[in-house]
Length: 138
Image (cartoon, rainbow, N blue to C red; front, side):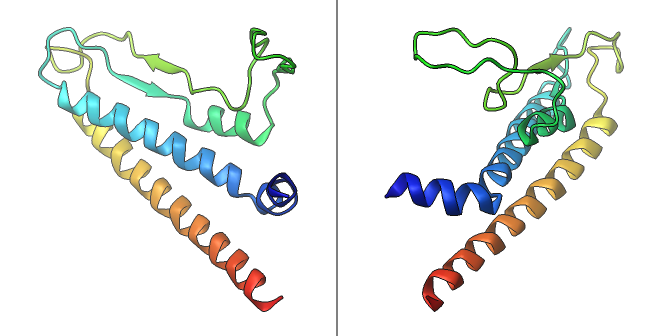
């Protein structure tokens, strides 16, 4: 019964995609916060994820094909849309004389990411409210 509800209602409502969107925003937020926390750490390399690329992968618009796992002992083949995002380490030269963290860029990315997360959370809340209303009205 629970698989039926998950497959018919939850998966088709877009909730899993919004969950992935929020996970990506949360991961990116942690990386940006880490970059800002290490702004004065010598030789620190800033980190980020390819947010839009990971989102495309989650939506299924990726050009890569992932092999289907039929046994837990199998190794994943190709890109799996449920895998953790790849963290990209910026190997560019020093931006501030100490490391390559550009505070202005990081603060702008932080603000943009907060907006993404806030919008994603609001859409998810509306989806859940819609499902609740549909269940109550029978």
